Image (tube, rainbow, N blue to C red):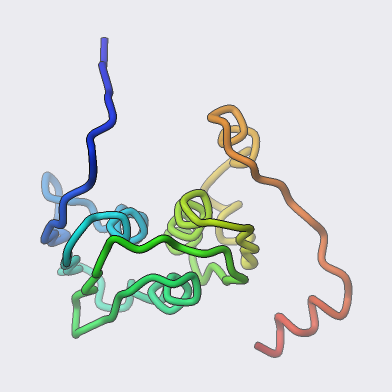
Length: 150
């Protein structure tokens, strides 16, 4: 049996991604979204991949107070994220933006779903089962063109 309870608040942390059994680099992006809720400053350093911070600009569009310095993301929380139009640049960034959208006030529109679909089967159905409000919409030709030019 696993018993899980909610704590009063998240605490800031310093995380370094490492090879197994260390903190997995694949969880770095979703963790940066979660750390926007921690009171204080957190640092996430990716020691394995230097280019895994493309999602930071998208989180900043949502109101996150964070910046990249070298191989580290500096996250200052407690921030209430706001829904925004964001783009997933890869699978892990997509997972991060879904997590951020679930925590945000308002509606978050995520494009680049081909990345998310590559790694997460039936994502909407699974998240709906947990109580999330999530759905897909088809883009019209003008919206597709705007995305391609952005």
